[in-house]
Length: 367
Figure (tube, rainbow, N blue to C red):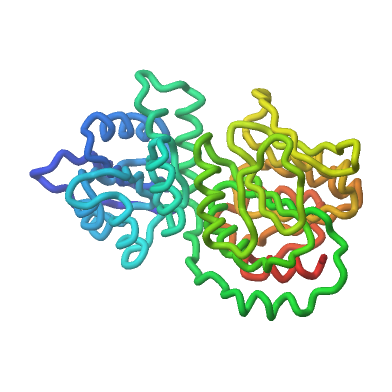
């Protein structure tokens, strides 16, 4: 945490600034063209003693200026605003004044696409805007929102790297021996979309195992995520559907709002079983999928746990190891949020812990 000491207060603007005195708190800049939303978010932020509000901005241009001026620890950013929208502002911010940004997104198709673009540009996380518009907002939603903003404020900013070319990926794959893994499961949460973008495009069409991506997301976001990666990757990428046969060389994105299980058919094939399960906080839950998949794939299952908040995947990785499967976790040095990988590593379930740029090569070493 950083100690803030704001001495300057503009006289002509309605900006909420708390003078800091020997207190380690996160400074928040709220960016939204709606006065109602600015007020609603301000009230939520003020509930948490770990935050103070350095200012507000009504559009992207104001946001850039106030980020330079007040140097907040974290920014909440609306997508649609006049003069300069949130995506354009984010691109400028990450290029010239990098800071942790949490996007406030709508759940429409266009909103989901804009959110994925924001994550690709460097936003740390996003939160459904509609959830905060309820009066009053549900306590669990408030807690989740504050937890995400806090995680973003203390997170490492993602390093945007160029996607590895097909030629480079082919050169990497020349060293591959006979396949010893039938299924690769990648689990991630906060910071996940940018992390998997540095891995998935590197797989070549002859990859011998099926790949399942479990990314914590609200309903409506995983289909656009799969479609986006289908345009980036050499392998086919699709959102998993109930009854789909798990095929080698295909990347399946687990659908948000459901749990993704695995089942054996009478002819020996493995298919997805997509079920509704309200008992779990995360949908999809990495734990649920790993517990299901480990009983089928046993020692031919490879799991990669990437950046993410919380401990989802810990219980599942324990079961994977009991079935003699294999686990790779991302190291702290490259994690945006070192939560999920840390839990698995400290429990002793990780075969290897490596930084994000080396994850793909570690995967190949198990193939």
